[in-house]
Image 1 (cartoon, rainbow, N blue to C red):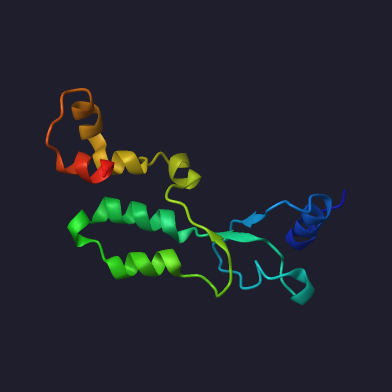
Image 2: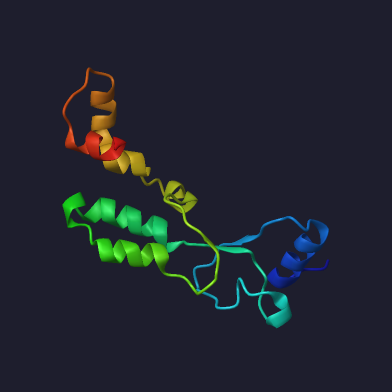
Amino acid sequence: MTYLNPSQANDLIHELYPHAITIAEDVSGMPLLCIPPAIGGLGFDYRLSMAVPDMWIKLLKEKKDDEWDISNITHTLTNRRWKEKSVGYAESHDQALVGDKTIAFWLMDKEMCKFCLVTCVDSHSLKLSLN
Protein backbone atom coordinates (compact mmCIF):
# COMPACT_ATOMS: atom_id res chain seq x y z
CA MET A 1 0.00 0.00 0.00
CA THR A 2 1.28 3.45 -0.88
CA TYR A 3 0.79 6.42 1.41
CA LEU A 4 0.93 10.06 0.40
CA ASN A 5 2.21 12.81 2.63
CA PRO A 6 0.02 15.94 2.86
CA SER A 7 2.04 17.78 0.21
CA GLN A 8 1.76 14.90 -2.27
CA ALA A 9 -1.95 14.48 -1.58
CA ASN A 10 -2.50 18.20 -2.06
CA ASP A 11 -0.56 18.15 -5.36
CA LEU A 12 -2.63 15.18 -6.56
CA ILE A 13 -5.90 16.89 -5.68
CA HIS A 14 -4.88 20.02 -7.62
CA GLU A 15 -3.64 17.94 -10.55
CA LEU A 16 -6.87 15.92 -10.82
CA TYR A 17 -9.18 18.81 -9.96
CA PRO A 18 -7.53 22.13 -10.93
CA HIS A 19 -10.35 24.19 -9.44
CA ALA A 20 -10.36 22.34 -6.11
CA ILE A 21 -9.73 24.26 -2.91
CA THR A 22 -7.83 22.56 -0.12
CA ILE A 23 -8.12 23.63 3.50
CA ALA A 24 -5.66 22.53 6.17
CA GLU A 25 -6.69 21.93 9.77
CA ASP A 26 -3.55 22.60 11.75
CA VAL A 27 -3.05 23.66 15.35
CA SER A 28 0.76 23.68 15.25
CA GLY A 29 1.07 26.88 13.18
CA MET A 30 3.21 25.12 10.57
CA PRO A 31 4.86 27.98 8.63
CA LEU A 32 4.89 26.41 5.15
CA LEU A 33 1.37 25.00 5.13
CA CYS A 34 -0.09 27.47 2.62
CA ILE A 35 3.09 28.18 0.66
CA PRO A 36 3.30 26.80 -2.92
CA PRO A 37 5.25 23.52 -3.23
CA ALA A 38 7.51 25.10 -5.85
CA ILE A 39 9.13 27.14 -3.07
CA GLY A 40 9.08 24.46 -0.36
CA GLY A 41 5.56 24.64 1.05
CA LEU A 42 2.74 22.11 1.31
CA GLY A 43 0.54 24.11 -1.06
CA PHE A 44 -2.77 24.20 0.80
CA ASP A 45 -5.06 27.00 -0.35
CA TYR A 46 -6.43 27.95 3.09
CA ARG A 47 -5.73 27.33 6.76
CA LEU A 48 -8.52 26.98 9.34
CA SER A 49 -8.32 29.71 11.97
CA MET A 50 -8.71 27.22 14.79
CA ALA A 51 -8.17 29.67 17.65
CA VAL A 52 -11.35 31.58 16.75
CA PRO A 53 -14.02 29.10 17.93
CA ASP A 54 -12.07 28.44 21.13
CA MET A 55 -11.90 32.18 21.79
CA TRP A 56 -15.68 32.62 21.40
CA ILE A 57 -16.51 29.71 23.71
CA LYS A 58 -13.99 30.91 26.31
CA LEU A 59 -15.49 34.41 26.21
CA LEU A 60 -19.04 33.12 26.50
CA LYS A 61 -18.16 30.76 29.37
CA GLU A 62 -15.95 33.08 31.41
CA LYS A 63 -16.85 36.73 30.70
CA LYS A 64 -19.92 38.92 30.69
CA ASP A 65 -20.39 40.68 27.37
CA ASP A 66 -19.32 44.04 28.82
CA GLU A 67 -16.01 42.47 29.95
CA TRP A 68 -14.90 41.35 26.50
CA ASP A 69 -11.46 42.61 25.47
CA ILE A 70 -12.03 43.98 21.96
CA SER A 71 -8.31 44.27 21.23
CA ASN A 72 -7.84 40.55 22.06
CA ILE A 73 -10.83 39.61 19.87
CA THR A 74 -9.40 41.69 17.02
CA HIS A 75 -5.97 40.12 17.45
CA THR A 76 -7.39 36.58 17.41
CA LEU A 77 -9.52 37.28 14.32
CA THR A 78 -6.65 38.84 12.36
CA ASN A 79 -3.61 36.90 13.61
CA ARG A 80 -2.27 35.16 10.51
CA ARG A 81 0.76 35.20 8.28
CA TRP A 82 1.01 37.85 5.60
CA LYS A 83 -0.86 36.80 2.42
CA GLU A 84 -1.96 33.50 3.99
CA LYS A 85 -5.62 32.85 3.27
CA SER A 86 -7.62 31.48 6.15
CA VAL A 87 -11.11 30.31 6.99
CA GLY A 88 -12.61 31.81 10.11
CA TYR A 89 -15.51 30.10 11.82
CA ALA A 90 -17.36 30.44 15.09
CA GLU A 91 -18.22 26.88 16.09
CA SER A 92 -16.16 23.75 15.92
CA HIS A 93 -17.06 20.11 15.52
CA ASP A 94 -14.63 19.49 18.39
CA GLN A 95 -16.94 21.38 20.73
CA ALA A 96 -19.91 19.29 19.65
CA LEU A 97 -17.95 16.06 20.14
CA VAL A 98 -17.28 16.83 23.79
CA GLY A 99 -20.91 17.75 24.40
CA ASP A 100 -20.45 21.51 24.70
CA LYS A 101 -23.29 23.93 24.02
CA THR A 102 -23.73 25.69 20.70
CA ILE A 103 -23.00 29.41 20.58
CA ALA A 104 -26.75 30.10 20.38
CA PHE A 105 -27.25 28.23 23.64
CA TRP A 106 -24.28 29.96 25.30
CA LEU A 107 -25.84 33.30 24.35
CA MET A 108 -29.50 32.56 25.10
CA ASP A 109 -29.47 29.34 27.14
CA LYS A 110 -32.71 28.60 28.97
CA GLU A 111 -34.21 31.92 27.91
CA MET A 112 -34.25 30.69 24.31
CA CYS A 113 -36.67 27.91 25.18
CA LYS A 114 -38.55 29.73 27.91
CA PHE A 115 -39.19 33.07 26.23
CA CYS A 116 -39.21 32.31 22.52
CA LEU A 117 -42.50 30.49 22.85
CA VAL A 118 -44.18 33.29 24.79
CA THR A 119 -45.02 36.80 23.69
CA CYS A 120 -42.09 39.17 23.49
CA VAL A 121 -40.33 39.33 26.84
CA ASP A 122 -37.64 41.89 27.59
CA SER A 123 -34.53 39.77 27.99
CA HIS A 124 -30.97 41.12 27.78
CA SER A 125 -29.61 37.72 26.66
CA LEU A 126 -32.16 37.35 23.85
CA LYS A 127 -31.65 40.93 22.65
CA LEU A 128 -27.86 40.44 22.61
CA SER A 129 -28.15 37.13 20.74
CA LEU A 130 -30.70 38.19 18.16
CA ASN A 131 -29.18 41.55 17.26
